[in-house]
Image 1 (tube, rainbow, N blue to C red):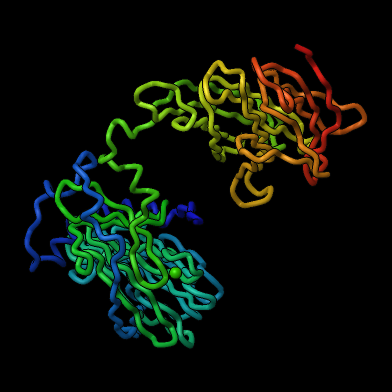
Image 2 (cartoon, rainbow, N blue to C red):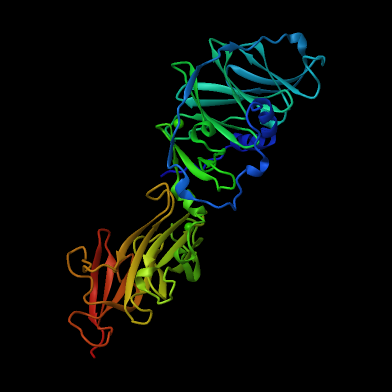
Length: 473
Ligand SMILES: [Ca+2]
Ligand SMILES: [Ca+2]
């Protein structure tokens, strides 16, 4: 699933403002609700029982008509001096000013603003000033453009005002409590609005319908029974907590107006995991100076660790995995897992491209010292090479029962693979090959290195360039 990683300035500043203004907003808006003590805000250390949490929450939106209130004209005589002026687009200029005189209607200590549309000035807002209060233009869908500005009402009660321009006249279409964030929360190309208010965070989702001239609203706490809800623009998820001292649970918003628990995120915080289910890292090793994506020379790294779920320590093949974590010079990361037990050999080789290295792993199987191995060849792609995200393609994995065939249908090797895998340059070929050592067919007795074969990737598959009998016992 695609995860939105973009964090825009407005989101960050809006989040900061939410925190600053939650108290004031709660006082102004939530007086008729029972008071909830700050102690009931869920703590990160709280006990978690995933099973009591709803997998999905269907939200019901209530539509209300656009208010369509024209902005009032500003009398030029009220303008003392211009603080700054920003051209938002061809039609709209946003201006902050100081009134000619302060009075009951225009008290001191605020920043005042107006917009100029086709030469006509309209009074806009009175705010606490600073960068957080700028006029912002946002396109919610295709040509549906709105302008937003934040305003402080009363003591510290924040609202977001949405207006649009119709026939050169600005109309307020909606006012939303709190400092709203505009984000495509279901990633369908149309942006929604999310706003959180209250000392115990209470989040609502809004969407605008410009054909119907309505704004629809669903309050998450009211409809889910959650005590707490917040939106995180970085991960594009909602955090809900249903009981005091419960870890917040991450939900994604789906286009069918449903919140669905995001188990990928929630499992990370699953404190129900017993000790015996937790992997033990037997050993880890960092390999630096690699060139896996062909970008930035040898600036890629791999960290290879053996994890073990065999709590009794028998070193069993079916209870351990080798995890290869890759970090490119670009900062992007990916990972690949192969079955292994005990020790392994790590090689890099130009198997699939002259421009970059592939990873070859020779891993011990069955028992750490049996001499039997599996060989993996991993073709690594950085972000943007084949997918927007980095990926690892396994071009060789010898763990299966069935013999591995070459591009022209012959067995790559016979018998079992044994230790001694190495990388070799191949005469008159641009790429490198792998030398696999094997017991050969029909061999009984001690496991020994009886045959070796050089395999080479020809673009479509592996071919055997050379096969040698290496030892006669
Ligand atoms: Ca959307
Ligand atoms: Ca690189």
